Length: 382
Image (cartoon, rainbow, N blue to C red; front, side, top):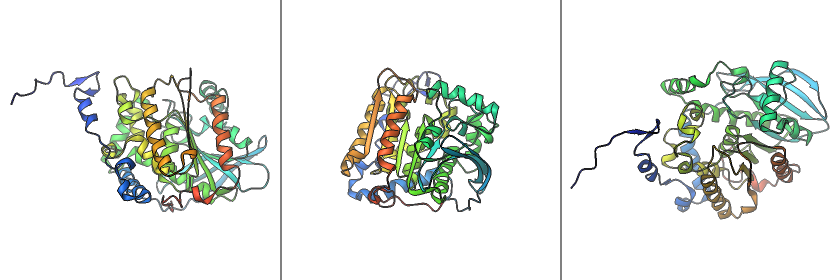
């Protein structure tokens, strides 16, 4: 038998093994719903979710929240509240909330900020910071660049939602990180028997659980809303938490094969470590993980010219998601929309379309039949 040619070079493009296409071809995703129908849908959800949970390397969190209000100010149709609470047993954090005027309980939105290689602001990217003028100016620049000058959290509060935004580790109040140090931070988590991406996932489920305890919030009408890395976080927390009744994810969905191509931003490492659960893609593709939220409502949107997510990978991911929701006779609860001529951005028209979709599902008391609890997703006590 003839031996294969000597391998040289071993690395191409500076960061891919020369045999990366071979590695991709071996990923058959045996735990995807399409390959696990013999388990039944709820059985598949339980097994696949348990697999994801195992790879977080973060134990379930039983710590009480011990929430305290630090500041409250009137706003245009809503109150601005700065709180602190125990996000985990290791971290007590500040968070920003907006509460609509008038009697509650209100529908709510957990707002999940992006990465953007900008660490001085986190929660402030989505809720206008009334408590810090320097951050307000920085955040306004961010809003001008990505959100048509608007703060999505303030827009949702004006529409009647209680909103909450919390910094991920490394951003805003939890800063101290530089772009160049992300990979070292992630490796130190691994050396400590933990995971940076797993921590972010666990913390997001905790923030959702906090919202469900608040008297201003209807616990059956909580949405997860995010852009870019926040879009990833939105569908991830919906997959992991039964507290999320609906999801709006902007500009973060693709297949693994569509993402792992030369030139993709993920190949640079660094920011990728916030979204990397080692070993996960041996059994589940990216849209398979998002599908753990089915059949609860989910809205995914992106620009057709988004340079971070090639159109072919996005379209294939949407097709995979559609197959899962359709299999549960819930095709009408999944919405996907691609905007011609737009890139990695969440403009005012994109927001208005997404929030109108969300209004139609959460402005009135929800049908218990679409909640995470009835869909077989365990509701964490965390």
